[in-house]
Length: 410
Ligand code: MLT
Image 1 (spheres, rainbow, N blue to C red):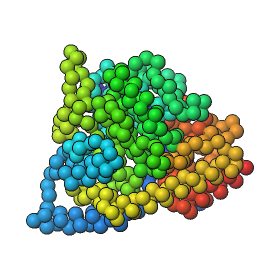
Image 2: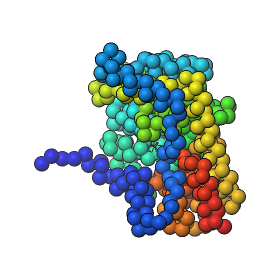
Image 3: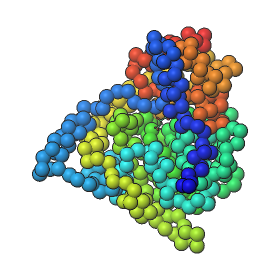
């Protein structure tokens, strides 16, 4: 009989967010009158900026005419979008990245998982704890780990705890690692990394010949000019880092889908016999074989994010969610909760009040305040006793959520 990839059996039954949705749906079925406010998954709520929808309409019209219709596009993405990204996100900020180092995709979640296709299976891999669960689960699926222990930590992965005790600053691995996942502004804690923090990681990677997988999906939320928005702002990063970025959270593309991955041409890893091989070439090969690109229409929409109007509208959108984050954080602090993040980041990370563990607090909030957040333990063992609120919602809902939260815990 056909066999399965048994690594899937090592995974927890459900991916975190579908599991939350399952619990919320079952609560709503049992309590149809409850007006539940969801600040769980970081899913945007505000409509696409007008500059983007106009570009999407125009591109759709092009597709309806024989003269301008397009079939397959380049698997790496259209030049017009790659060039707009290279110029606006990198070169205009003094960062050296060229258009052909950018690979357009349908999401950073997919790319951070798929990137494992080009790495060997004997790499030692480090993740922060708590962490975006995709990094861990995709390594489990790719045969890189043993079983999970009682706390859900997989044998073979190196976990770097980030908690209030170390001010959410991970210690360097005590044993050398080959691949390190970093995400800043951080999901789930909302904490940011300074230039010095990232420089230390780049230095670490250079010293140990490791590769940093840098998830920068939330960079648009950085308003402090001292905080880096890209790992490539750090000298030497081109030789040690891959960066993942997305239009999901800044331009509202969670349901529209467009993202990109940056792989500098000088970045190499080695074969088992020690020969250096370009990761840019391998990823290009992987994408040309397994991916047919993002639709032309949506790439035109993403390109409009860089037009003068698009930039203005995106800035307003990001400012709107950042104001939500401020209201959430300050609302929690007003009732004595220790909150982190929510500044230069869309997530607010809090200590669960009283004796509640993360899932206990999730249930309490849902049952008594009809409010949904994400249990910190869902992001890893070191997230136990913490809880995350997402600022992606309407102002009305965020204000109501703060009121309900305050009433519950006061
Ligand atoms: C989250 O809530 O952590 C994010 O929405 C997950 C994602 O972007 O896939």
